Length: 206
Ligand code: ZN
Image (cartoon, rainbow, N blue to C red):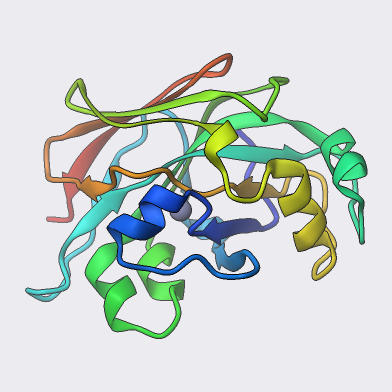
């Protein structure tokens, strides 16, 4: 998959996930960016970086990701949906304790290999797609995109009110409940109905 020009993500877009982290839902979506240098694809290894004790937990976050197809600036929700090229599976890998310790999430979510995308871009209906995350074959997250607080069209419209979205940009739409840690030797899979399975081994940085 081509490397996106930018990767825009939303926090707390599923009520039960906000609850599990002890976060209140924000009145508007909370946006953050992941750097293009963090992107890997299907089959590539997610690398757990060397981190100090107490900050070493690295979590999976299975998410539906929209890939932008045409330039969007102050788009309506309907126009934003029209401007999507297709959807793919994403894993918004997160150093959870760093996220909790720091005011903003650039470092927690920006390590190399922390933006996992693939295995293909497909034209699916984003309003009711089943999302499953498995670790070593065991289901950890099971949800539907219909449970999003802010739907895909509204989310893209909201982002495009701030920054112009360009073809190839990737928009992570938030993770459902059930996040948890990854360990050296795990295999993590994100499966979305109509797209396929994004499967990655996990390695600790030597
Ligand atoms: Zn996320």
